[in-house]
Image 1 (cartoon, rainbow, N blue to C red):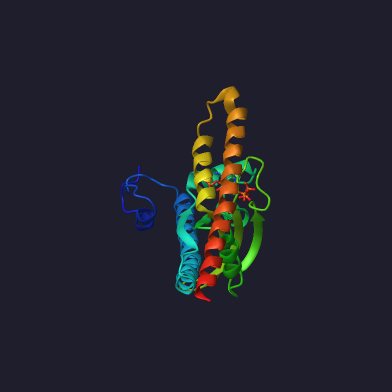
Image 2: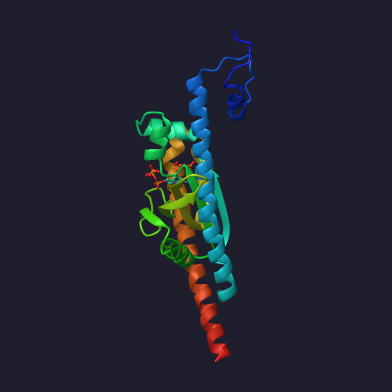
Length: 236
Ligand code: 0O2
């Protein structure tokens, strides 16, 4: 066992807290370092896009006297979820695969008040000239079979680092409070896999809830629009 000074010790310490007496292969240290750097870059990309969304929300809230965005959540995908997704897609479990084939390592979830806010926010974000749209999935217009609704965008945003500019991919999921409520519970329930024969009927119940929620979202929008129309009439 090598207990002397290891030339890589400083690097090792910065990547993981492994005592110096533990021999870690240099290539593993190198890979860990590269992974850490990639994750840092994704987290910076999240900050760039999040700031854009916050700016839009601030501007629109002053102009329209209400916030189109209720909340913004973000996350960098956890290492185990990255491995699980690469495995599910039959891709090699490598850093290159992650960077080249996973579009949702950096993820932002925007929770809007009303359905029309989703489209307004998406339109304003993608019309910014440093944003490149890679893919759009409109699960509101075309809900998933299980009832899942949300508007998904994969965008690329340039991030300036000390010695380079990198175009980073970020997945932006935009949905209403009601859609988010459904998706959160659906996500929780997916982890409870020991439901045996009940899976079909539970799926059907969840689908019913999703449809009720979508109807409520549409109804809330009608109410807001009639309030706005009323206000305009009163002002005239
Ligand atoms: P997590 O843990 O939320 O990140 P792709 O990403 O394009 O390779 P897919 O499944 O075709 O794979 O993409 P899609 O349909 O755009 O879905 C990606 C993400 O949307 C999922 O990420 C979920 O966050 C969300 N999502 C999609 N369908 C459902 C659903 O039925 N229920 C819920 N609750 N969320 C859903 P991950 O990586 O699966 O999970």
